[in-house]
Length: 359
Image (tube, rainbow, N blue to C red; front, top):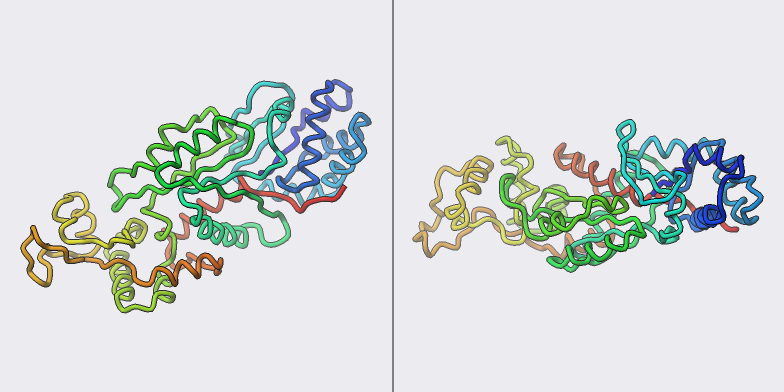
């Protein structure tokens, strides 16, 4: 997280108005600068004032001085994120406001004492292995928006346990002492489908007054749907995969470029499913140009298990490539690229960090 030292702090420091607890909070923030778990920046006058504050320890003043020496470089990072935290005078609890299109989490200086700022942001995934595709997306986003050398990223992955993700999120959010992002997908199989229970339960328990946490509530079936079709085709050596990719390309031509986000890669699509789900048939019938629901074998409807779209083959090969953090680009599909950008923007804003400084 980028932590901006608010401009109002400068006058409080120079007028010697800070109490002992507020000095302790500045010491805590100095330790964050040294660890690099978050990226601390601020206005020039504020950083200069804190760097010269005699009541701070020598190492704390040196930490703030190191930020001041990189003032111009670090300020440019603030322009490229959509969310950051600002330390302000006072006590109470953090609040979230929107300023010039950015979400700003206002953290009272005294509340810093109740936070665990020396720990990185925690990112709660439904399944722990989900972190690999999101790490690939984050690296892609940093390369496109930030380039190299401007900031690092730091986060701790947390396993949600699938359907128990809401319970883990509830407990972590209740503590309200660390930055937290919970990532869920919708489990929907077509755009107007009902949302799955995992994201719904997180949505229901989310206390939006706890602004140190955020629910990244994504709308696609599951993490496999974030992988571009070209990558799937290249890394799944199966003629059935070639057919699947061709079907999703056909959906694009038919005006449904988002179809790849809702396909159940594990189960595919069966004729019996479409026969039983009117809304699913209305969507996939257009996407795949289905003229009727008679399978090639002409099975009796009650006995038919035939597939319109077969499940993805050789998933292990694709998973191995992803878990080795093979670089991937979503540029082949505007819909997927926009989704990657939206995800990357959130994850980078929350996990932005600095190179650790020795002191």
